[in-house]
Length: 197
Image 1 (cartoon, rainbow, N blue to C red):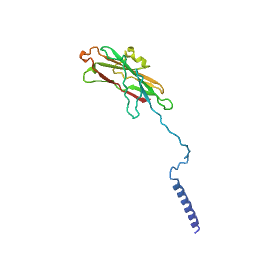
Image 2 (cartoon, one colour):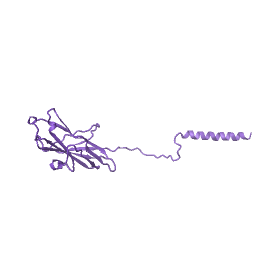
Image 3 (cartoon, rainbow, N blue to C red):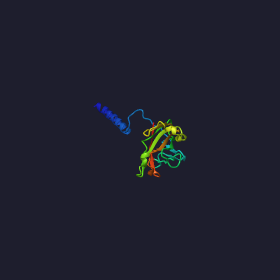
Image 4 (cartoon, rainbow, N blue to C red):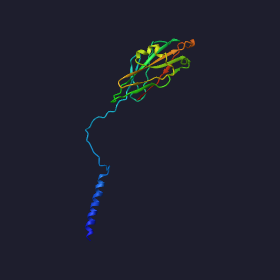
């Protein structure tokens, strides 16, 4: 009978251990800690890229507030009609204006070969478009910039945070264009892509 008080004591210890584990109900790790913080504002970085036209200096965000891609109409230099056998020029400046902390470099590129369209006249088949990367918008009107470029070239460039890069475009009309196409119009779409490096 001497063992009865010891069994009762062992039962109380066992019950105390079970209650202790039930009260924890979470991580049993010994290195848990907590820290208090006052209320504040959390702001995510803004991945923002701008596009600026050669002639008008109009600037727009590459992604519009509703999340869709922006389209920018490039003004050509010299302005006016494209003459067979001659070229006209345009350019776009791409700006990395993100507010992300630290170094934040993007890679901007001409996404695919420019798409030429017309209203069925056939004029698009007589157009040649070349794209090159340049140091400034002022260089876009220099014919020598396009000497080594091929119509299939898809230039790209790295742009550091707070800096800009430029893509220039040369549009040429074949001298052998039929005279009956005079006064026709054509459209050229040039997709640009940007990705964080």
